[in-house]
Image 1 (cartoon, rainbow, N blue to C red):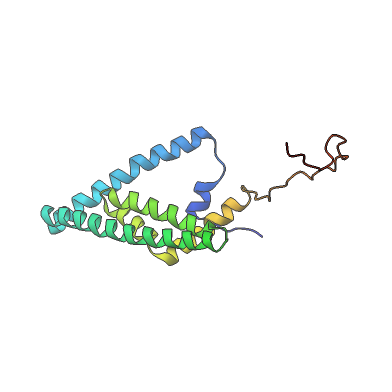
Image 2 (cartoon, helix red, strand yellow):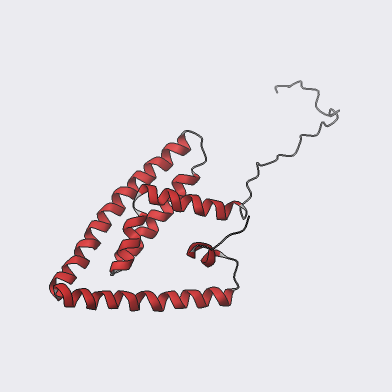
Length: 166
């Protein structure tokens, strides 16, 4: 099968060297703040600085409340899965994505808030979880523990099973 194009996630997730990954992260940590500043300035000019700051504070408060409720729900699902004896991989991935959403929502900015709020939407999380599972499937191998077989030892001549009480 021939792919016509790769998604940004596929390009980002390709195997890369440490230097390439450092370069990508450096670029990300430079470009995102520049884009956020640009949005702050543009929105501040358009609706005013006080309203822009109010929106930032409002999204932080709403984001924290949503993250808390989604996190609590994810924890309940994780506990339920383990009590039922199921492997809680979906629930654990949801918890990680909610944690990332909370961290991103606490970062001031409109782009980061958009990403954070998207990560709090369960269907979006399910899509991302599915993509991550596909990527990780080839890297993770689950094996059942194997216990050594008990060897049959010849009966001891010292112990005949009789107990002598003195």
